[in-house]
Amino acid sequence: MAVLDDKTRSQLKSVLGNMVNPVKVVLFTQEFECPLCKDTKEFVEEICSLSDKIDFQLKGFVDDSAYAEKLGVDKNPAVVILDNDGKDYGIKFYGPPGGYEINSFLKSILEVSGKREEFSQDLIKRIKAVDKDIHIQVFVSTSCPHCPEAVSKSHRLAFENDRIKTDMIEGSAFPHIVNKFNVTSVPKIVINNNTEILGNVPVEDILKAIESL
Amino acid sequence: MEFNLNTDFQNIDSDNKAVSANESVVYECAVIGGGPAAVTAAVYLMRKGIKTVIITKSFGGQVAETKDIENYTGFNYIEGSELASKFADQVKQFEIAVAEGVTVESFNPGSETKEIYLDDGRIIKSLTVIICAGSSWRKLGVKGEDRLIGRGVAFCSTCDAPFFKDKTAVVAGGGNTGAEAALDLLKIAAHVTIVEIDEAIKADKVLWDKIQSYENFNVLTSFAVREIKGDQKVEAVVVEDLKTGSISELKTDGIFVEIGMLPNTSFLKSSLKLNDYGEIAIDSMCQTDIKGVFAAGDITSVPFKQIIIAAGEGAKAALAVSDYLMKS
Image (cartoon, rainbow over all chains, first blue to last red; front, side, top):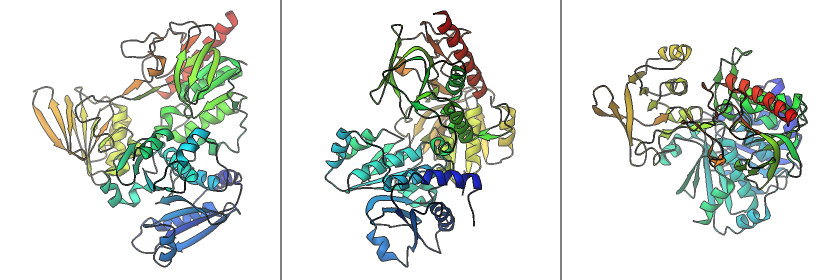
């Protein structure tokens, strides 16, 4: 079942060695009608096994639907990262966080564990001032080198304000959503289902789009 | 499942001696860029004992966006992301100052000490500068292109080809970039049309041979793209047959614009002499028209944009800086 080679395992172990507090990684899958669920499970489970600070929980999208609903999970495979106390920062990965997206996945584990870079006070003030519910969807492909940064930037917004929730959406796993938003280039950021931003733009640009809603 | 670990994650185990760039230091050389020219220059400078800072958005440059590399000496085959990671590794084995994840906003080459203004507000000072800022995608400049970017108009084929599964696509450009985009698409798309403005395809034979192993494509040479049509997303591309002047419409789900690159010189704000193509004009010592300012790689007037040529030019620029510092 090992999907990672030894060199990668040791690299990932050192990365995860920077975690501060334990985190919970909750994966939702289903057995049927989810072609990417099996691969995603093997991959996420193995990464999580590389640190004893990660509590990996496998849930059924159908069997544990009440829990899925509680966390706002509406499709699968889905990964939700919670902190040690079970706090949900609104950070989800829909589809496999593989390819280049492993970078945003690892970063989010480190960030939820408490290892976060400092933002400028001015920026934090502006993010905290957002007073409506914001849903950010970041569309990616796993072969896109610029995409993980766009995903990580949306995470940083979500960390600073509980009303901001953000999803990574791996395009190949959800063709119907890709069609709905006419996604042909990634990263593409969709805010509250109507405002679209293309490319790995500065975090200020995403914030400006949110402020102008 | 495949994955591509970032350089800063990959290098976590390696001997990373790099330090953060310091505003209060006047460096002997500042390298702007993180591609093959910049990285090679940095390695040569550090080996010469020159106090160096390297300023880059990320290591690898266009190399990081390239999937297969088969013409960089010493490697029969290497993935772009892996080569980019090796670049970063080789630089950070030195106690070099690094400003990573930043963009240069402007540059003041005026006095003896050059000032480089970063987008995070820092100002980096240095006696010499090597500009290796590379180039980015060139656009067609036709109606509909800007409006439909991200809605069928694409530039990065490794990023966006996955969205063309069982769909049709046009590739504008029959050079190496166009051929690589076509290859990314042929594996997955229903049909690919390659449109080349010249009379013949200019891509390397090895790439062209690979394309020939597919059947789901056609080639239009001596054709130019005149317009991209579509309401919410690309629906058709208007092309002109340059031999007859006749105009026709190709129905398509998207178009990949792969017609070469434009040098990233906007931050220079016309402080340096450029050639007719907008590239920094340099002499055989990589010297620009301003003393102490050197340039290397795709951003310069040196012909043929290749990884190994950029790397060689970077080495040359570093040695020229070393000469310059000794004489001044």
